[in-house]
Amino acid sequence: MKKYNNFKEYMEDVYYDEIFNRVKGLVFAHKDSFESDTVYSVSYVELYDIHVSGVTFKEQNDGLLEIRVSVDADISVKGKTRYGYDEIADNRAYNIFFSAKLENGLQQVRITNVEEYNPARFEKDKSLSQDLVPYLYEDAVEKNAEDFLSRHYPKALLQPMALPVFEVAQSMGMSVHYAPLGDTVFGKTYFGAEKVTVYADHTLKAKVEITTQPGTMLINPNVYFMRNVGTANNTIIHECVHWDRHRKAFELQKLLTGDCNHISCEIVDTYEGIPDDAPSIKWMEWQANQLAPRILMPAKMTKRVYDKVLADLYTANPQRRYAELVQETVERVADYFQVSIFAAKLRLIELGYEKVQGTFVYTEGRYLPPFAFKKDAIGKNQTFVIDEQNALYVMFMDPVLRQFFFENKIVYANSMICINAPEYIETNEQGMLILTEYALEHVDECCFIFDRKISASQQYSDTFYRRCFLCRDVVSDTFIEARYNPEHKDNQSRSERCKNLEQIASVSGDLSDIMGELPASFGGTLKYHMKRLDVNEEELSGRCHLSVQTLSKYINDNGADRKYANVVAVCKALCLHPVFFEDLLSKAGFDGKWNQATFFIKQLIWGHPDDSVEEWQRKIDDAHVNLQLPC
Image (cartoon, rainbow, N blue to C red; front, side, top):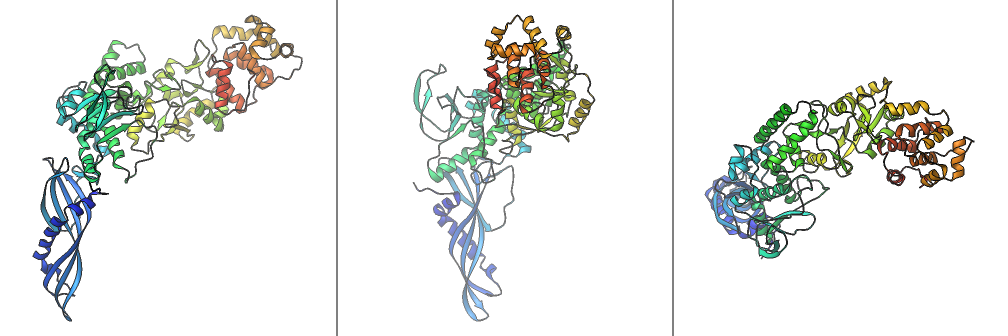
């Protein structure tokens, strides 16, 4: 089979004679149009050659294609001139319109019109790209999703429901099989015949070999689309979108090259961008990614369900925190439409429910308690949440935040940088700083805002990749880079409050009593804690990896060189509460001696009080902090 680089080459090679003859007829019928200042009386015109210069496509309602072929025609014109009778060369451009069906090759091909060239009027709803991919615009995505449902399952537009995805696929003439597709491929749609291995049934044990037919869909049961953005339902509808919108693109490639039978949809974490001249496969993936969630959760039906569920929950549980009610609403909406929690959350954000951003936030291996903030508190490229290492870097590098942190006026808690006041900050049973219930309901009042840069937001669209940021671990370098903006008006307001802050988070009664009994000296305080905790010098030596002689000097305040790392190790070995930890460091002479190491240790004291010294050292090394603890 002969292969072609593009459809222009194909049309010129296969339909040269038909195009030539129709243009020839038009040229002859309009020979007088070739009169000019040079040839003022034309007696004869002859078409010598044609070259296809361009092709455009439009979809027709009957499933046919309108193919507009633009050609440059080389023409000989004979007639009277000022010097007698002569022959000159001319060149004209023409449009030839074809109607055809693209299915197992180009079928039902006929020329419908020929005319002198004029630019085609672009019709955004009917025009196709050079690769026969339909255009899809950001402002028309919802409309296109509704159009899909109106053609394949209109009931979903009339009443809220979990879309029966297998029924939808069947109505489109597709067959669905689970198959072992590899770790990164979540689905494949076939447009031609290939031998493939699939699971024999839903037990996913026995395998069989089948030959695909156009419309065969393979689903990987072990890989969810974009890992946690969607479920198997999202994957199935994703593949249905390919079949619905992109069949012609694959039929075209089969026509040109003969070896394009399927589209393989893979999980990727980074993208190289999608410029206008990008391969059509990227545009196809972007379209399926955009449409699938909207098809599963139509806008009007989703709003109806969310509003009712939230209202019912609030009526039944008026005493619960609002953010908790919103989080439960997101979960129930996800269950109702049978999509993942994260897919539901991100769809609701697209529909204007910005407060669900504070639900199901997963960062550094754990979920945060749900939090709430006032409307319009943050823009779409802003966040309250920042991973710990990034937060420490931001606070250390910004002189204002650094001073606030040194003075205990701000702290890092619940993956946010928060004003350290009693109404906002408390300690849990492990001594870790956490946001109070009031703070969790008003993070816009007490937590700093960060501009976020999503590395994938320039690839495809921010609308889709915003989804990934909001549902993934925010420490992921692929998706999030936070930057503190001191010029932000809300950050300036919080800074002014910090400057005037006199009272920091209160210490509980038991801790306060102990603090009142502690001696003023480092050695006396160390001895007090050892007695209180029933730890002798030999046991403490084994725990902190310092000699008994060194510890004895510390206890007796006899002028021993108290190295910072050693004192940290002693405090850590005693498992001191963060309040006592910082008190002992201060009495050892390190109060106010701030550098990268003491800055980082301060956060470990309050943020990771239960971690082992080995775990602390790993975090120190990961942050490239120059500090080696005895261990």
